[in-house]
Image (tube, rainbow, N blue to C red):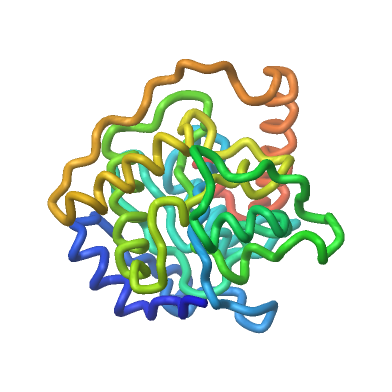
Length: 262
């Protein structure tokens, strides 16, 4: 039953762990006040969830989507956005629309107790599944979007910052019994997601645990290179990208600058 960090506590942890970050403010709104308050609970927190945006658009375009949301899903879509250059953008604090419905009692138990092996129990629910039995992950999971398609390895800087970001957050919550197994991938939470793509979660958890064991100043290794096939057939991937592009075009039809970046 962990209480979420305050914004100031977060900044202290990012500084402690040498995580490069940028405090984002758009349309006069600071990341500190950007959330989905009033649309569900925020906390207690039980862990972290890693995502990817599913495209290789310019980082600023991904940032805009994560901040403003889409026509079918209001922003913010995460607390953190990881740029190609390794800068972690702070996009919101509090409840964000990143996890949605998913999980199951076995997954929740494994996440809270960190008592699973290399991977947690397989997910059987997704957004739209009856709740219960699906859980609303927006209430109790911190979320980070890696700005990349998931179809190749992340940049070295991007991956290293994600490792250190999660080490910084889990380090704060070690008093609550957290370790690297408090980190899941979206595909481990929802049975219709594939993110974070070419980033095996067992590998990411091991690198986060190594950072925790070595402490601040640890230099994470490069990301694992792709050695496994796409998690979905190529034609399904193309269809998904096309649908996403259609949503983004509709969302930002009145913002020509954003559309040009997309």
